[in-house]
Image (cartoon, rainbow, N blue to C red):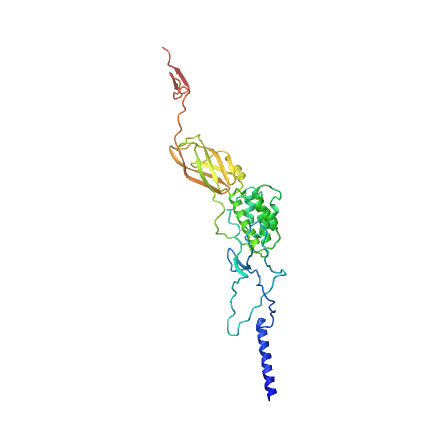
Length: 359
């Protein structure tokens, strides 16, 4: 009787041990034992939005510049990476929801390029403004990289080439983080256009992301509702002094935030003053980055004085400054001796001239 009771107790202990082991392996016997220490490092796509979250390892060590070397962190597939087993919930209770821990943190993927707006690109030739527009779709980064000059010293091209490399690298499609970092360092403070500055800022964010999480990839998405990188406008019209101009006077029209190739505007654009289109192509006075200053001659109008708009058009785009100028009536041209221009004693009657200066 005592032997039978002991055997029953031993059997119960064995059954209990099996139940505990099954629970430790996830409840269905398919799990793996805990090897001790370390958190799971899994990259997952979060809720659909313009910036998708994912789970990535917590960064360690001091912060460095975006172009600096990445700190040593544990990444998926590395020798120091360990998995953590999950404990099954008792029957009749709901499974716990995943939560961030000291080894995992919910972050958002880097923000991608804002809209330009899109360059008209009338000549269909690659230029930094139109290639920026290609890069706005992160699926086209490889195609954009193929048309960017590889040896250009132009900082606009250097930034875009580095950004295309980073775009491919962060999505796990090749690219070169080293080339992206070199391009970022070489173009520091040199991007002179609104699109160039936007591309440089996004490149810096991608490099910082890679420094923090060198083993993680991200799915880049665009936000069509983001604020445009460029604010194209007529910043002002310079008259050379005074509050009024007259027909024949020359004025300077300053454009800011040009988001297209300026050479195309100078070939195919038009200038309007008071609704009158000026003859010929726009004449450039100076240019720097996304700033362009045009020279224009005030035309004759149908009435004076008149407050008029100034507009610049190119391939469906228009920059307009309302009430930019007050055009006064043409002035009489004085003669060298200060008179009205008609010699004293000469009366002009149509095609005939009579000399009335005699005795």
